[in-house]
Image 1 (cartoon, rainbow, N blue to C red):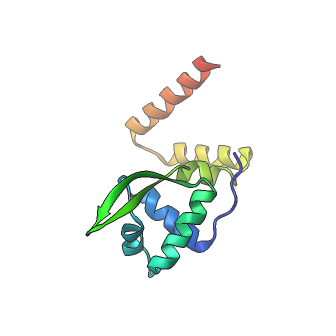
Image 2: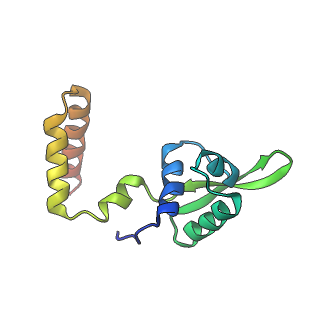
Length: 120
């Protein structure tokens, strides 16, 4: 699925969400950012909501206030993959396999390939 290219600030917010496994409030995101103000963080989250990059996962508390908690609805891999053609993807995958010495990772990849073949 093709995605719109994110701005620098939008990318920063998304990276924060991708790097954290828990639901995050605008305040949580602001605290982990490189100096994005609360107003800007909230504006970015609203824009990302409209673009379907994030969703409101639940409602939480921040001190005494009730706040929305956000999660990414687009994975980092899906976003990056949307800008890479199939030939480049193949080169990246090949390079990764050649550079990896971890048998567990290679076994997982092999299993994914077998499952994909069976599902066709």
